[in-house]
Length: 295
Length: 309
Image (spheres, each protein chain N blue to C red):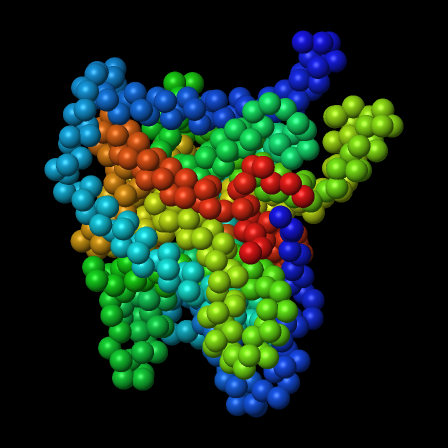
């Protein structure tokens, strides 16, 4: 498999056959761009509407207005002061950061072994990893919940973070696909120089695999940040352990109907991801492409 | 076994140890437990009691299960193809845009980044009957908008709209597929006088068939575990006071129309504490997902373990 690298920020795509279409009529050009612009408006409207709503007074947020009569950026301060949002945010950051770091540390060696080491049962193990990746989480929910409950760890973030010590199937899969693209000659050269496998991994492979690791790390971070099912299952009994997603889904009822504050919290939940995306577009798009494949 | 080989095997094992433990503890153990539990009856306080196939028999006349299967099948049949067609359409549109393609690509991708819970809240507001801007806009052009998330007929289509909005990752996969079609194929077709529509049907589409298969299989698996959006949409649209795990009270709102299979599984297990039956439902879900995955592994190249570079 070849990893197709798509540079989102690069210049427009020159599609095969574009030369042929040089004489395309102007009307078609306008039609296509009009459709694209309408779509842009449709794709951006929900986010813009949320932002506008979050800047209204709580009374105006209950009307059908789109445009704030008066601007209230202090809603964003209020949501920090008057709601448990700081705690939700802290829990989400703890969950996402530790889980990402631990998942990478435990998954990279496994992915390396699957991609570059020869051992008996390698193919079977890879198939098992795919099965784990494809497994709907609900299948193993009850036994796992009972397991965590036996150790009195439900009601905390522990059941969400501890599994990260033991690799993540999707992360292993993604990293393996990436490591396959690194020519084995580099590894052989290191081995000839007397490097053991661990040293080869740390000194030679890791520096070359940075884009793949970045993509896998981003996916894991985003997954944890967005995770709702896990926190609902394991932390809902203890509000102190709630994450942003769980808090958001309960926000309206805990804090009556201050729609402006609810939307401010919603905007705060999505903003970090969008900011990260703009800094790491390339790694991101490359990662998505790795999960699919070229025909 | 020689000392050298033993050492080599131990090194390999040291790479794999965390993952092997993870597979054993978080996959094999709970999966085997789930199979065993599915033949028992128990709750959080009692000890599992063997009841044979009772739980599976119970599935035959469980009206809620039937409803949840219907809803999940509806999502598989509508949600998955609509998203694939939408993603191919967007990818094709992007390849023909020469001005500002990078900008359009980024905008189309962005919603995929929004946390599903946040996106669902946004859509419930946007589509709110009465004060939501969408119906407001529709009424201005003389259309009486539906009740969206508050209507049993429109709740699932509203979830499809939400899924279309967050189509970015699928679009990027198709874009890579479309751009990977060799140019020589298009040139040959042009010589034969094929127009754009022809080129799409007879060249682009067949070339990206593996990508479509991949998207279909992962789409079905995703739909089988569809939980967050259905749960949150039901809760927010219902206006019921639910917090934390209490959200299960508003599952399926309105009138069970968004009641998907995972929602029923969660309700059985964590609201009614019928843990034996919940595990039987889990095993049925596993079999469905496994069958779909088998299709992918038999057909798709990216999952081929023998793959060489």
